[in-house]
Image (tube, rainbow, N blue to C red; front, side, top):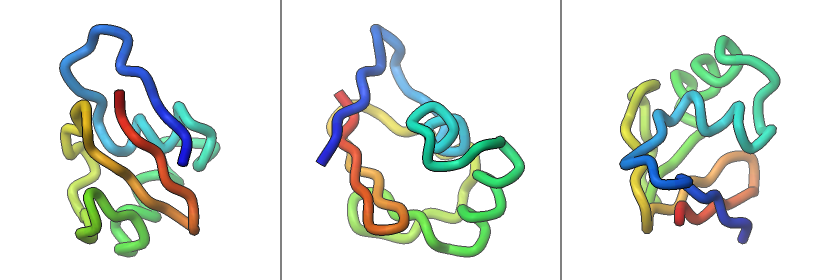
Length: 69
């Protein structure tokens, strides 16, 4: 499992996170895969594109996981 550092921010929006970690090449692609129900947060499918992801949460997509620091 990889880690993602919030660098002092309170949260990162889910669609932006997918771009920042390189799982999606654009925001449009990120929004599409979220809408398709292929992204989960803490083991639950997340359909909100702008869901606020905070420290301690785990995001999973396409067999990859990332822990938010």
